[in-house]
Length: 305
Image (cartoon, rainbow, N blue to C red):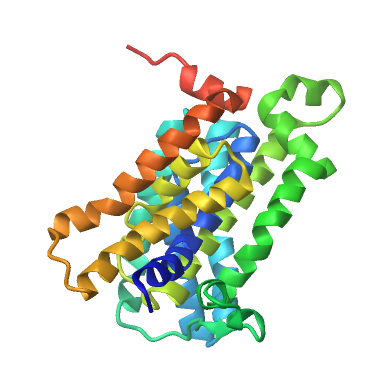
């Protein structure tokens, strides 16, 4: 396999967990709520998926458990932000540390446990397409599910009635109120759904990508997902591209090492974050004015001195 093919294949595999989390965060932000606790929901999903799969023997039950665990942690964020009017950014960080603490406490028994995992499946016909087939169509089932999720998410946000309500909740909440819709329930649902997607992203990380569980295994992927969403202006296809970009940067390091390139290890470890930040910042400048009104209020809110 060439260096380019290896990096692109690894980009899809490594970026899928971020893609799910970023798609979920897109839903939350469209409703006007930023969730910096996405990392925590990913951790909860990763542990829940591995634990449930280990106990039940079925990886798909692990994915279901991951979605529930990620959604429950996001519900904590929604409660404090929407019902108690707490600061979104501070609450998100608290929720992140809550997720980190819970997974550290309850994940000890699963560090060396065995669990059924997802394995790559070559799709008949499609996997034989020159160059592209080996990259995109010899992946695990959660990757294939993400291929469908992105266009479905785009349709939901921009073409469905629920999408109109979702965007109105984040952009013109007073309009929803005027027409008899309650904004808070819509935001609650959006935040919880965002957490569920983040949990599925964590599931991909533990039972498809690394095929293991260890403490703090997300290693900042949740924050990367939030950054991707903001710079990609909450556009599902651009969010997916940003996630795959980070995954490709992750795959570049081991690919170079395997080919004997003498590059400093610390420099290789920094490549995914540096490349992703530079490219997303460059692309994000074009969409800087598309932030929903609800989110602009979050970042423009005065701080206590």
